[in-house]
Amino acid sequence: MLDTSTKYMGLNLRSPLVVSANPLSQKVDNIAAMEDAGAGAVVLFSLFEEQIRQEIEKVEKVYQSTSYSFAETAEFFPSLDEYPVGTGQYLEIIRQAKERVDIPIIASLNGVTPEGWIEYAREIEQAGADGLEINVYFIPGDIRLTSEEVEKRYLLIVRMIRDAINIPIAVKLNPYFSSIGNMAKRFHESGADALVLFNRFYQPDFDIGELKVLPNLDLSVPSEIRLPLLWIAILYGRVPVSLAATTGVHGAKELIKYLLAGADVAMVASALLKHGIPWIGDILDDLHNYMNEMQFASIEAFKGSMSQQHISDPSAFERSNYIQIIENKAWR
Image (cartoon, rainbow, N blue to C red; front, side, top):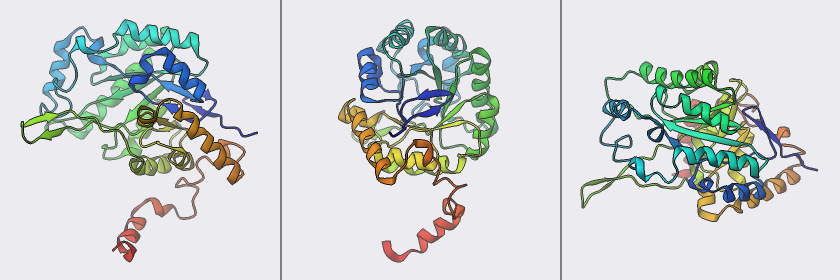
């Protein structure tokens, strides 16, 4: 019998397919359906710092150090009374989900300042969440900010939350750090149990007729797996944290590639918004077929087998492979 179990951020999961933060998890019935379809865990929809903080002036001060023209503007996020679920309801969804399902429930906090989350992180733990995913949505639009200052902000948030709670913490990384490997190491040292690669900053579009900034949302596509695939393959076995992939999973092919690179889990959201929650089962059925065909008895039998440390030519992930692609005449 095939063993599709895996371990993520210290939690035992029955499958490597995890539902990432999205609006479907606002309903406990949907969470139960995700479990029935085979999901290994569910990351709840994100709760925004703006919903938690009482001192709005501090948030506005942070906005002033970012770009007023793009995604971090006050206009980009809904007003506080437009959020579909409040903080009290969020805790209640955690409690109800824990009573209803057996799979791990991972809460998600989205914010920009260290002070905004600490007390609520404790309440999330007390409500019964099995883990917490930290999504630091910070675009350093102030050109006076140094890379060191930006990095310190991220690390301080992780350290403060780690000191406040005992449940596992995952950090949703963005791909824009100048040294992702070093930051991965420092996040681990600051208390992160898992890294989620990568956060998709929702970048604005322009209405060229109305001359307005449009905060459009585009669902992910399978081709977007390339960047997280690269970094998971490089980080596997080098940083002692769980690795999760969270971009472009629309079928078993993307899930399998991420596992081969070294991910403990791959997260899915866009495909569920497009095809529905039962799509989880279709992906896992195809995973089972692949494992049978390749004679892999378990996820552990092939996880990381195509990571940088395990392939015969590790330079394939670095500059030499880039040069080879450029010199290849086949595409011309």
